[in-house]
Length: 302
Image (tube, rainbow, N blue to C red; front, side, top):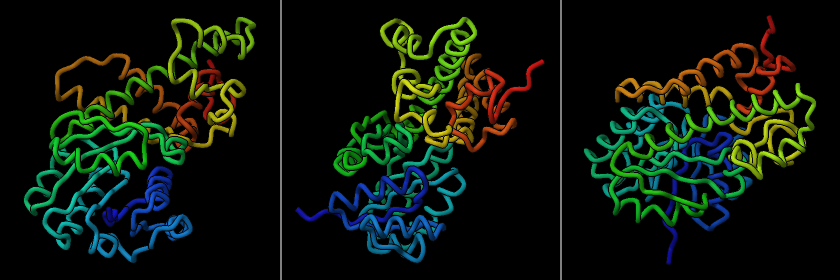
C-alpha cells in the first residue's frame, strides 16, 4: 500500500527526530522550519525540504505541526488551510492551550479537513528513539486514520476524547511530572545531606513505594540512569522553559475548571524561580541544582 505524503512543519528538538523517523519508515515527507540547520538535518534524514509551510503542505495528504505556541499553530494553520485539499488530515503535536486547540479544529472543519490535537510525552530522547506517547483529541474515526502514522513516531497513542482532549491530558500529565521531579529532587538532596550515597538512594527508592518515572528513567543526579540529562550537564531533554509553559497551561485550565491545584501552583513557582536563576534553557531535571543551591540555576541560600 502506498504511504500517504506528509508535510512536517516545525523541526525543533522534538519535531526534527519525529520527522526523521517518518522518513526512515518510508513516508514521502516534505519538511519545513525557519531554521536552515534544522532543515538540513531533515534533508540528511531523508526528507525533502520545502521553501515554506505552504510549499510543504501543497501536495500533502497529511500535515503535521510541532510548534512552540498556540498563536503560531493558528497562524501556520491559517496559511496551510488556504491551499490544502478537502479531506487532508491535520495533526498538531504541539503542546498548546485548550482554546487554541479547539479553534484549530474549528478552522479545519470549516475547510473540510480532518484534524487532531496530538501532543506527546517522552522528551527529545523519546522522539529520537521513536518511543513517544501520543495523547489525542478529535473524532474517533480520524484517530483511527492517524494511528498508523503516529506509531511510526511513538510507541503508544491514546484517543482521549473530542477536540482539545489531547491537550487536556498532556497538561495533566506534565503537571504531575513537574511535581514528581521536584519531589524526587528534594528526597535525593535530603539524602545527600544525611550522608547517603546517590546509588544507594536510587536502589532503595526504585525498589520501594517512592518509585516513579522522574526517578527510575530520568534521575536528576548523575550516575544511576546513564541516558538521563543529569549525565550530560543537564542539557535538554525537556527544557525548563517548556515545563514552565506546561505548568502555566495547567494553572489556566484549573482556573477555568474551578479546580484547586496547590502542588501544581507550588511547582510553577519553583520552576519560575529556577528559570530566573539561570535554568531556563537547562533540562527541567536540573531543578535539583536550584534546591541544592549549587551549580547553574542554583538557589541563593539565606
